[in-house]
Amino acid sequence: MRQNRAAVLWLALGLVAGLHLGAIWGCGGGDSGGGSSLREEIVRATNEPEAATRAGLFMDIAVKQAKARDLSGSETSLESATKACREIQDPATRATLFAKLAETYYSKLDRRSDARRALEAAHEAADAIESPESKAKNLAAVGRAQGVMGDAKGAAGTLQDARKIADGIKDVKGRADVMGDIAAAYQKAGDDAEADRVAQAILTVAETSEDQRARADAIAVAASTQSKIKKKPEAEKSFGLAVEAARKISDPYSQVMALVGIGEKLAAAGFGPKAQDVLKEAENLCAKIKQADLQIEALDKARATMDKVKKRG
Image 1 (cartoon, rainbow, N blue to C red):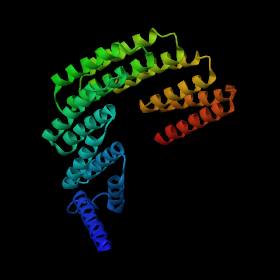
Image 2 (cartoon, one colour):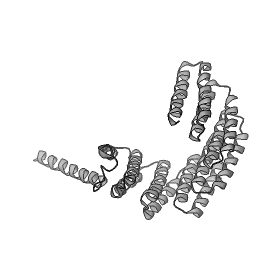
Image 3 (cartoon, rainbow, N blue to C red):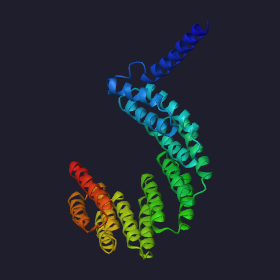
Image 4 (tube, rainbow, N blue to C red):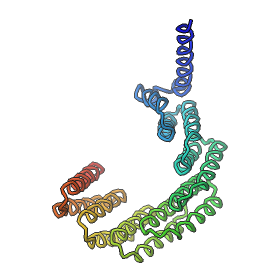
């Protein structure tokens, strides 16, 4: 009798899972633009035990389904992502993913009411974050989503709140990273003038630092922002200043890692040849690192980044 009950239970669970996957695959949609590989992604996402990872996977699947015009499947995938987001306990992670979910609902399905609900959940989670740096970064993500959704007034208010928090962050690199996110949010919202003002503020912050590594990293963030708002000459000049600061770092390992970071940002900004020059310089400096494990780590990082840059073209 117990064996029969167990068999019935497993059969019921299998039917529920099958119905769930069938809804996500859509009426014809699982194979559209994705074939069996997309079905495999859906199964993997469904079986993923970690809520944050599951939410991200379902959002990625939804984007692919929307691109393939499987709107029904995309909608179901975003519903699964929403459920996963609600399970996340960490407020910072929850805020980040709900903000991404809001943008996805709005830009891929034009589901504005769902996008607004996701955005409200993101803002609520961001308000619960205790770390100033994390709170400001997530408020920037919320502001970015508001800008994407056409709420210019709301975005301006949220980003102003993020900037006030950023102003209180003492760590130069942390402050610059947050301000870079804020500038990117302004740029995404179409306010290039404000993004440029934030980039200039990042450069000012960098000048206050006596730590050459923090200075180099901060200037590179400003340069990336300038590139995104189509200020290529200013970006190229700032990247040059970042490299100069990196060359003044006394510790060889830190110097190599700083140059690799600058190289990555140069490549992302469209300065491929210059990125390769900087990465080659970083690779050559690895010989100065005396600690063997750190030398290997730095060399692997420099070469792997160079490979990525060359593939990008």
